[in-house]
Image 1 (spheres, helix red, strand yellow):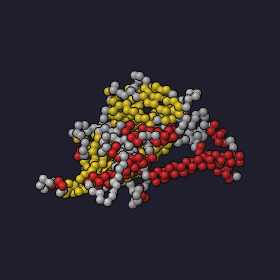
Image 2 (tube, one colour; image 1 turned 90 degrees about the horizontal axis):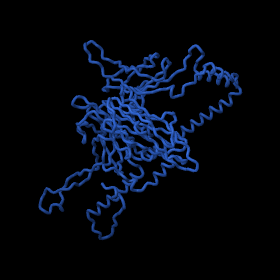
Image 3 (cartoon, one colour; image 1 turned 135 degrees about the vertical axis):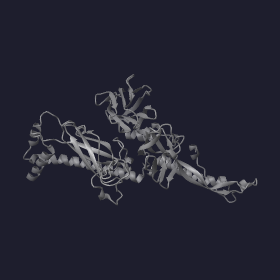
Image 4 (cartoon, rainbow, N blue to C red; image 1 turned 90 degrees about the vertical axis):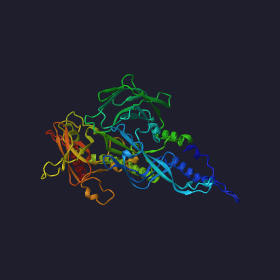
Amino acid sequence: MNRSRYIPFERNRYFYGKLLTVRDFMSEQTYFSDKRRLTNRLLFGSGVIAGLQVVAVDDKSISIETGAALDQMGREIIVPSPLTVKLSNVDGFLNNDYAKNVYLCLEYNEKGKEPVHTVAGASGGSEDVSEHNRILESYRLFVREQPPAPALQEYDYLIEDTSIWYDDGQVRVLQSVPRYIEPGQSFELKLSIEKTLQTPHISFEYELEMVQAESVEGDEKLIFSEPTDGAATSYLKSIRLRALPLAVGESKQNASIAAKAGTARLVIGDKLIYELSHIKQTIEVSEEPAQERILDTFYSRSLDRAIETPVEPCLYLAKINLLQMGASYVIDSVDSLPFNDYVINPTMLYKLISAAEKDDISHKNATAYSEVKESVLAPVSPFPDIKQEFISLLGPEAPLPPEQQVSAGITEISIVPQELKKWYQRRQKNFYSEEIEHGLGIGAAVFLTAGISDEQETSDIPVPEMWKRSNLIYSGAQDVFAGSEFTSNYPNISIGFIQDSKKGTFRIGIRVHQKTERIRIRIRWWAVKALEDNGSGQLALEELENGINSAATTTA
């Protein structure tokens, strides 16, 4: 469908005695459908409106939930009933290599319905001439082996510049920086690595060459090395940079980021890759807030740019990771809506903004209350210097920053029971993770907690992502949610931990209390470093502070 047909609009003009033909009736329909689709395109964009979640039902098949979406031409796509299909039967699925990531796509499709005989077409005497009496607005599912180019993702180009270092179908390395920043503002350069599970170990590094920017951390070398377990298909590595102040008399300058010649090095397994893109990204540095510049760019687009669409408009419903199993494949994981293509309901957006504002106000009020409380209580406290004297007992060692006191991660535990060798043996119910390093230091006292999660990565998540059910984390007794909309789809399990403080590691153990068809459980864990009493008076400062404030309140 040619996008230019939307404009200009022409509608029928009726008058007595007008001869109505097929052209007139088609124009009547086209006028209203084109105006509606142009409105959809310009006001709502493209993406999923509701539903259309994709899950794996077994090693070879997937299920698509009912739902509605808008494509890049403003056309409505409705999936009216759930659909379960074998992946190899979907259009576009190729058997050339099973160890890969493929993308399930959805596109608008019209089909003729109710064939009838037409008098006008039967002038030759043939009774076989027929036309369709209805047009069914339907959809088509197909598979693509390549993700969309970053520049084609809806509105992303307004917010950040994403470039491709390397892409061979098995491994994709992307780099992103913001489009607009303010002088002196810090920002993140993000390196995203996507791979298949059966791809060998990956490492990548290069030295930064910057203009009008500097490293906050003092290190101008970006280094990524995949963890030895290699249990994930995507990784995110970032380095924090800062824009330099503008030159005197300048209101706007461009910062550039590139790799120093000859320093980029990508290694996949034991193979050094030489075919890397030459990336040089530009960031506009200005005193004007970035949000205002984004809006200015958005509203200054030409109409042609605003309604620009891909040659074959479609929605990427899921990224499916395949494993090679002999001469066939196994679905390892399904990441629903991997590019966050959502259409946000204006009412829901308003409620989200309102909730964010309330949280911000509550945080500011809590901070202000804390400051007032300290200023009011300090003069009447009978122990004005005890806290400071207590801190002096701890010695010269400075407290760890928050990011070194807490760590988190995700691990998967297989719950496939071992085959029973004797009839009297009991079915296996207990399963254990590999040894995990919590990264909070050797010999540290660490508090551990965990819950069931379907999250794929720990990167920043856009607002609409909160609507994905995979973001829910289940912990504690699940029967309290039975019969509600929050009912868990997971088996009832218990979670335990065992720590090795000398090695700074731990293991997670789970017990499955009911039968399930799942073959693995994804566990999200958190580790918090505690202050220990080592005989030198190193107690938790929070407890002491609570005691001081309580005494001060009583005295007042």
